[in-house]
Image (cartoon, rainbow, N blue to C red):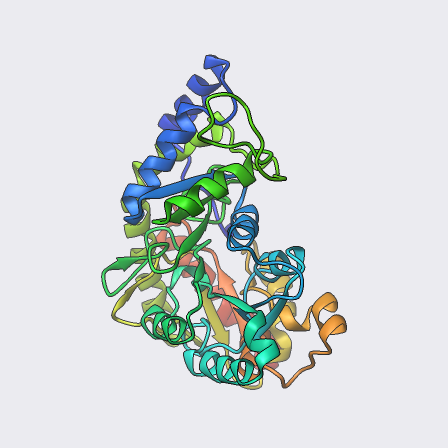
Length: 382
């Protein structure tokens, strides 16, 4: 089976975890603190706060901003469901915005339209508390335009940079554009801790609030335990952090190889009946996923294509989720097909191909051959 993803786990990673386990100090100690410092330095922020996963990172970030019942957070329509779930879990409402067809990221023009409409009404204008853009598949959203809009309307940005550790736009890294940036270390990401997340920020007050929220509400600066708010248990383990520290030593190599493999796919797919990703030349993607688009007339075959490729020993997947049309959000807010036309199209046609550092050129060729063959079979040509 040519797998969709295989993490870059090597002997030094295994040894780092062994040493952490042998220390018998297993939860949120010096290894976590060192991992936080490493990520903060890499991103270019003053603070990094490690948590259990990126869902927790997003949730705690919104809570740290005071997002609560009756509030509104503006978010892309196309992302993993956690991005919208955390808004609901705060008691707030997500206002979804359509995406750009080429980048799969939030469309700044649609964002501006949504902001103008919401701010015209006094009631909804007061309710809007944050903008939550996503860097889809490791390619950064148009942060210069999004930042300009955020400044114009005096709103904070929380970056969902789950896939984007190491991505940059105009030389500035993901996680350093907004007031907070949230990262994932899930196995589908370039580096992994199994599960795990991180929040980056330059705001010391927010960093302290995040540290309290992740640890039962305990004051992170108190000389003895004191609890200053209700909090969660979202602490990272020492062996996860040990793996993260080891993984960070190879992140530039891993990203370089993923980008090389993406370029090879670009060449191989020139003969395939699909559209390949288009990247903004001022942005540097992590190539977390390589997502192609089926052409007009092939939209209905995507799910069958995934199954047939699996039979051939090639693992593929949908790009990500059309969040407004999931059962929960569609039922609660009455969203329907046509409300987000670009997301409708992308969600129906997107297909993620295998991509990971150890993927061989032969496996890439076999993947592309299988993709072309099965598309033509489903078209009835073969």
